[in-house]
Image (cartoon, rainbow, N blue to C red; front, side, top):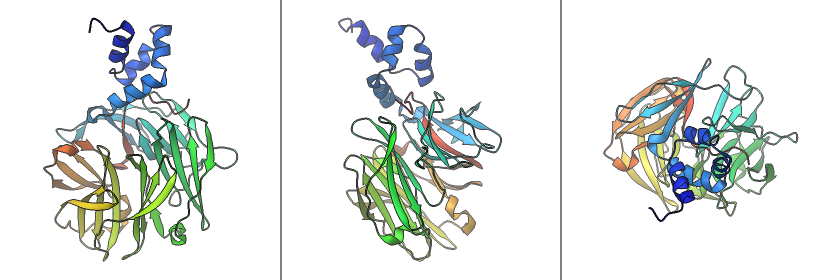
Length: 352
């Protein structure tokens, strides 16, 4: 260690600081400010920050927005700290569409505008443009946030408008939108199909596309973020005699799906993707009836060996698991009555 240059030692120490301490350290001197602002520093700091112990829950209701740590050993939240939105909004009417490495892609529901926002640093970037890019319509559009091989953070926006599909990519590096081709089956453009938000895993964005009928068609659309090519793969082979829902989650860079199916009673299976095929990880016993009005809001999280099934009204069922590799992850949009998301605290900027 004594043979290492001082600059290298300082760099190694600072990349291990919490994100908020990095922000404070920028004011120490000009040299530190320059060092902590480089893309190399941000990238390495982010890679060391993306751990379960650094996860935070952002909770939004009609009156407040707060951030809380996750206490995984008792499946609860720690003390909250209030967050003030740095952008104008209407009565906290903000939807979180996607999150990656501390960045949230959000929609202002009163204006339909898309933003990138880092709630740790409070920095944000509006993605809407005068030529109608960056405006999101719920139940018709799909969003995926990802980073490509050149470390450029991008947003994929799939737009369905009157039976016409438009696919656009926003680049943080060049701060602009561009259209990319995507030819798919015409029926997927119908509002009868529900597109999930994109889940980024292993250089690919994955979307579930599910028909809103009993026995309807269900597929997974894959977008290779470097070649910008799309392909379709099959859904896990779940029974089709009821409603079907798939919730995707990246677990240590391996894609998993919570597949729910049923009508009066529900079954839940956990699947993992190997190549283009799904392998069942585990099944749970049938779950008692859940009102169909809550089906669209079912989400899941796993922590401390338990699998929780939730709706926006709160926790419904707990399934015990003996799967230590899962540790703590939350593909969740509702938390005990709150809208929200789980994110990691980083210094990744929404703009260059």
